[in-house]
Length: 275
Ligand code: NAP
Image (spheres, protein in one colour):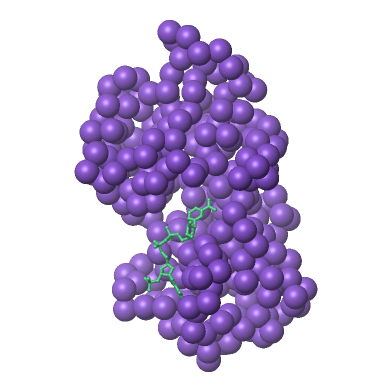
């Protein structure tokens, strides 16, 4: 990659952002497509988010990804928001265009693309989402657009204002899972072994039909839920595909070109391996 006076900046804004795999994915894509841009991870505390976004717009940045904890608050810094991001209530991708800051959300579609990669067909099928946070809401929107029947199980259903969620109890989990074609773990439970040990009611994979699929949004480790689903001989899809495809969709928004997906996938796998 050549950096010169015409090089444009792209970045992921998060706090922290420095652990992100997105620079590896996007810099590989820019190099492959000969796009004169560089993608950095910028640690952005909440109090500097708004200035960071306006400064990126002011310097003519190519685009930005937005990650935890900014996906909701960054909407205040946008001059317009796409219909799907508005419906989801969160933005994970910023497009800078002629002084405008346009907020998009590519998480849900990225998840659906990852199912396509894994040859999981969800049209007309029953899907259960575990957890009801921002990622679950984005995935719910995308799955419904694909014709899936989605239900949600949540630890605190009273907090959920975008669907009628069932409570995370043994009985209600069993009822939901016994009829499901796909179960998606949209919680951060699998982030670490310490988190996993605090779960009071484990997911009853034994009631799931044998042909069903388990997907997780976690991508940096094999989670206890993934291991249990594999032991039950279910097909398992991890969160790497979602990470890859939400990035590929952002790349296309920024460059108006198809993403070099296999180059991005190889760069992601190499980054994960060396982590
Ligand atoms: P979030 O908005 O904080 O939502 C988390 C949800 O999980 C909430 O409904 C929360 O319930 C629930 N939860 C947390 N701990 C739980 C537990 N011990 N038992 C049951 N439910 C629990 O987070 P998010 O943005 O949706 O992200 C969720 C996960 O997806 C994170 O690990 C994130 O890293 C991952 N993610 C991955 C990708 C990807 O590209 N692969 C993209 C986006 C997100 P309460 O409301 O009761 O706390």
